Length: 486
Ligand SMILES: Cc1cc2nc3c(=O)[nH]c(=O)nc-3n(C[C@H](O)[C@H](O)[C@H](O)COP(=O)(O)OP(=O)(O)OC[C@H]3O[C@@H](n4cnc5c(N)ncnc54)[C@H](O)[C@@H]3O)c2cc1C
Image 1 (cartoon, rainbow, N blue to C red):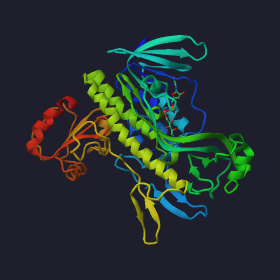
Image 2 (cartoon, helix red, strand yellow):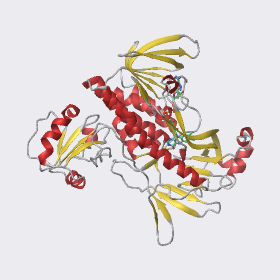
Image 3 (cartoon, rainbow, N blue to C red):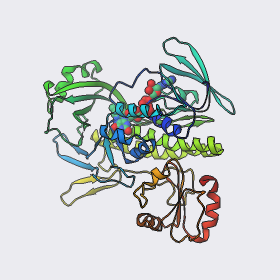
């Protein structure tokens, strides 16, 4: 096949998620990846409830759950091990229907995303192949590919192209997007270990060592996996820092060489940056290609998965329902400010770990009578885009409610918009909409009441599109949103 609905460049977690979400709509998709296999170095170990909800839509949670553990939270301590700040992650299910925070190993997720794609006949992959350039006309994009081994050049065309090709994105360069540096740049070593036997004395939580001499992070990961990360000084040799003797010396307070097997080690430059442009015509950027943040909050990959969730249904509406390019224009504006908030908060966390910033990282820090400080997670709304700015409900996440027979609305109306109506609306509508009356569902009724609404429209990515406050306005509300609901 040489013509596709969508070509995705890069088969990391963003590309894998996007391919799955689009494949569920039945589109023909080509995924182009320059490497033969998974990225071999240490990367993401954390994701949140919102992301697990996307995995639920894709249909991988049953198989993936056993590769995760629930994360209990993070403690920030000083060089004398005194707790400066607590970031607890409650062990209860959130409005998204999942636990607030999970630990995992990135290759396990990528394996599940790739294996799920085998269920779709119109999804193709070309590995060992890199994109070299693009040429766009009004109706399609021509993509020039090079076989990494034979250097042979191939050409394919697609209605849309999404660059999920990571930090050094070729697609970002192709669309001439400026990558704006947001201020944080620091070299860190990252070491993944597998314990040979249980070490109960190791913390069960993530510990951020806010130590000006050597800022560091410890992560309790799935099973016997543990991770340490530590900042490197400018005058240190990378070769020396990555030597076994240097690393075991650093690990001395916790482990000796006979306790664990060193699986992977590397040095990264943790950065914060954002692309000024995420779309040019039929070409888009998503994931690390569009934004970068240091890993202190464990939100870099999550941001890419949020991009995929936002963009996939908009592309589906254009391909299947003839919606215009204007809809696709809301992708950047909605995602940009959301990811900017995560980057800003992560940078503040990085400054606190470097002992140069305040503990008021999220603006939501509370102190108990004994002086202990704890912070809450952030859940930024979507930026301006669909819906009216003065509608306070727009851009907020819609909780995952269950119907009377315990089926979740997400599963019942997967990939579809939902119209939620309160008991005040007496008119019976035909089944042409995906409709739920809140009449016999106390939780839904309570939600509408708290949202000061009699009707709410939920987007396929489970954010609120818009809400209607009064019966008086309902008729015009419905007619304005018909094209979205049909
Ligand atoms: C130490 C560390 C810890 C982290 N921890 C977390 C965490 O706990 N939680 C979290 O959410 N995030 C975390 N992150 C961030 C997360 O790993 C990344 O955000 C995520 O991998 C980005 O996914 P992506 O698919 O956008 O890009 P990538 O994973 O980089 O994938 C891009 C793919 O594109 C391919 N490619 C590139 N150029 C081309 C080309 N021209 N043609 C074809 N293919 C190409 C690459 O080979 C690659 O496979 C961490 C990162 C680091 C470094």
